[in-house]
Amino acid sequence: MNQIETRNIHCPYCGEAIDIFIDCSIAQQSYIEDCQVCCRPIELDVTADHDGEPLVVVRHENE
Image (tube, rainbow, N blue to C red; front, top):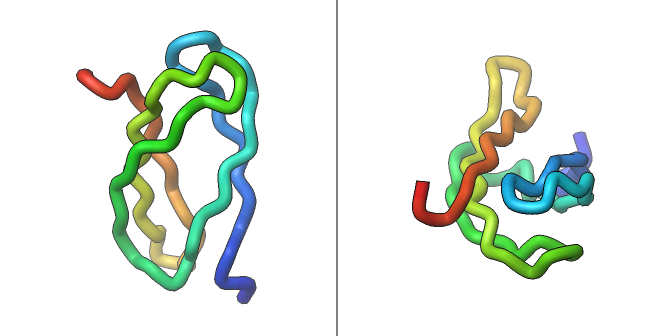
């Protein structure tokens, strides 16, 4: 399995589809990444499912 995977998400502010890179060697992670379109901070919570596939939850920074 590739350690770095790409996922397509939608910015919770502007709704634009953007690609993010996820390090799959880390089972659970939370971090903030700026939207590539509107530059607002997106909070990302990433966990691995039972097959090791990353599950991404996206929300506003202050949500």
